[in-house]
Image 1 (cartoon, one colour):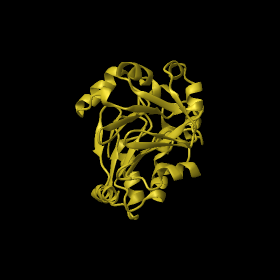
Image 2 (cartoon, rainbow, N blue to C red):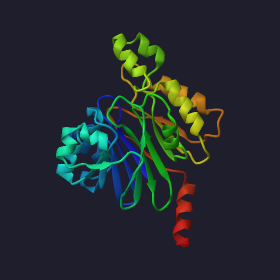
Image 3 (tube, rainbow, N blue to C red):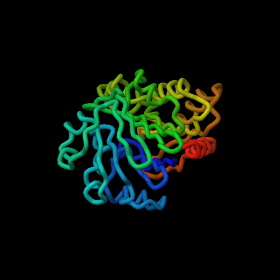
Image 4 (cartoon, helix red, strand yellow):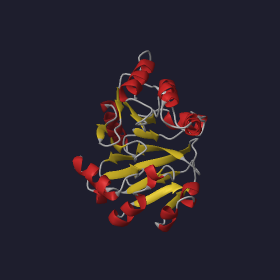
Length: 271
């Protein structure tokens, strides 16, 4: 399993996950030209992507999905509420996935989890390799850590987790009070501190990477977010890496620990 963040933030979001020859996008919030250019930097052909699953209907997560499906033949998936809220997804005949259900691809399983955000039926996504059991989690655009969110993040090998804003910078920033309140609400976005607390609670021995995502360009700072997370994880058993996703560039690849590959090989031999 390999994971790249093609870009993350209010200007667009997309995460590529690969298991062998099977590839899936979680969100496609960029135009097709940008998606193709970002994929080109890592040597991936857009038409080699098997499917794209959309977490919710906001433009920075969905804007390139329907066009990508038409151009490159992707299968599209989203929750029933998300499809109902998006004309483009309905016209693209996006498959509707009940929240809590899974989608089987050729070499991976996508499982959806309910998350709290100001959208019709937002989801977080867990992608598991059917050969090794390794899993990557994409958990962004949420106001707080519900029990469903904790289940989503539990036992992840690679965790892409929202760390949207620094609380002090949000309150001192350029947004009017109503927008500040929405961002900080229980259906808004995770602060650095809330993100760090959630990551600390779900740390386990196999967690190889925590990737901070959806950082605000106006109310956060990469160094502040990274420091907040590393300080929270310092006294845990976390021995992996902490990275920050970029809005305008690709980061990765992020891989599970080598022990996961060995476990997958043992499982294949047992079969």
